[in-house]
Each structure stands twice: as C-alpha cells, then as structure tokens.
Length: 140
Length: 140
DNA sequence: CGATACTAGGCGTATATACACCTATTGCAA
DNA sequence: TTGCAATAGGTGTATATACGCCTAGTATCG
Image 1 (cartoon, protein in one colour):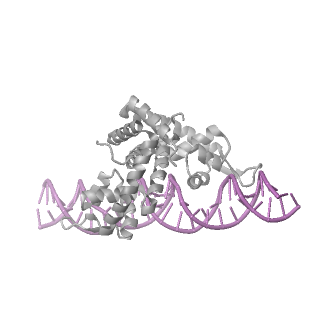
Image 2 (tube, each protein chain N blue to C red):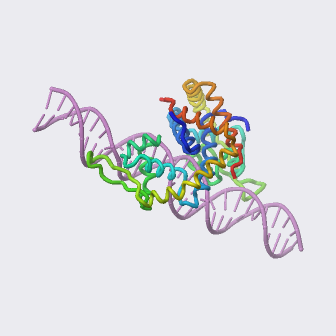
Image 3 (tube, rainbow over the protein chains, first blue to last red):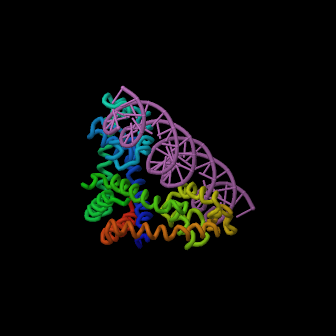
C-alpha cells in the first residue's frame, strides 16, 4: 500500500477503482457514473449551452459532445438550437432523462454511502476536499 | 471550489485535469502518462505475464492488452511466448522502449516537481497517501 | 488416462478522452 | 458597413476503459 511515486498514475489507478464500483452500482438503472453526473447537472442547471456545460463539468468540449451522443440517442436529453446564437446548441433533459436520473438516484446514494462506510468518513471528506483543491489548481 | 457531492465524479474531474497536465509535459517524448507508467514498470519488473502486469498496474486485463498495442506497434516492447505456459504471454521492454523511457524520465520528473510546487508539498503528500489507501480499499 | 474445472488471454462492442483541424456565426473596429 | 478576429461547435483520428463471450492450454480428480 505504498503511495505511488507518480501522483498522476496513483490518481488514475484510484479513479479506475472507484469508477468501476460506482458503475457497477448504477448499472441496474442503465447509467454509468459519468452519465449520471451529466444528467444530474442538466437537471439542476436547466437548458445550457454545450461549451458552458463542459466548463461546469470540467470536461473537454469534444469529450462532452461525444458523451452526450448515447444519451441523446436514447432520448434522455435533447440538443437543440439556441435562439440567441445560432452557433450555440442548448442541452436539456427530456422527461425520460429526468425519470432515468430519478431512478438512478437512490442507487447512487447507496453507492456513495457504502463507499464512505468502507473508506471511512474522515478519509472520504479529506479526499473530496483535496480533489476539489486539485481541480482548482492552475497547472498551466 | 466546493467539494463535489459525488466522490467519484470529483475524483474523475481531478484526474482528467492532472492527466492533461502530465500528458502535455510528456508529449515531447512521444508518450502519455499511462504509457510512461507502463514502460517504467516493465523496466523495473523485467519480463512479466500480461495478467500479472495488469494486477500490478491495477488495470483491467483487457484494457492493458489494448494499451500495449500502440507500444508494441512502435517497437517499444515485445509480447512473446512463455516457455513455461503456452497460454501466457511475456511482456518485455525493447532497447527502443528503454531509450524512450529514459528520454521521458526527466520530463516526468519536471512535471512531478512542478505539480508539487503548485499544489503544495503537504497536499501532494496527503493526496498520494489517500489514493493509495483508496486503491487498497476493497469495494466489492 | 480421460473428463472436467480452471486459468490466460484475445476479440467484439460500447463508451470515454482529447488533440488538431474545420465550418458557421458573431462581434468589433476601421 | 465591411473586413477580420474571436467564438461555438463538429469531425477525424488516436488512445483509454472495461464488460461479455470465446478459444487454447493447464491442472486436477476420479
């Protein structure tokens, strides 16, 4: 359990580990953790342009675009025109998307709770704070 | 800079952020951070079977197999037969692979140092410890 | 020794990630 | 107002990730 020499590699391994856990728990709802996070943010942020949404999600614009495709294909969200700017495309949840998110929510909450129980509340809290600070750190 | 409600989503965002930084720094050597980690482990672990290597790298077996393909194609490593078990395939660095890793090493060290300076030594240390503990946590 | 369970790994498929380059549209300044 | 810089997003390409299923080879037990 020695820490990795490489901060990045260690973080990537841990992320794979945790992602597999959440994905497994969300699978009965037909979502993975990335899709769950996208739908959840769209639910609270209402219609939003792709670029602005990418910034909110700390995601590359083109990655977000590709990740939206299966969700749009399955009717969980719409990618429509923006009356105020014809370059922009507005993302919005459909009723099906809201229903899917609502169905997944208790699964996510249970996964979250189980993770915290296994990893420990103090560690969980510390990790959340650290990753938020890392994300806010300008590395360029 | 509020922490994410979802531990997994926060970790994933931070990992994307850090990965982009390391990838940018390693790009002059023609490697990304994942490839750098693979070559480095192979350099120190000598010839090793794919399955055992996947366990060492905390990586899915099939993911590792796919990630090895560009490296094998570029002549940085070989995937050869195991005399002791014909099901197994032994991975080994080529001289080109060793040279590529050696060329990338100072770039990695500089990235590591710059990250630590920006994020802070205490936070860096704490993060490394936490992700190592997370990886060691049984979530199944 | 032969049936069978187990193990190592590949392949098909689907999604995730992001860079470089492109087009369409907008805004601004001469 | 027109010309050009800036912006929004898509596309091509390459790699990353992992599940389910398959084949080949190994080991074990009767």
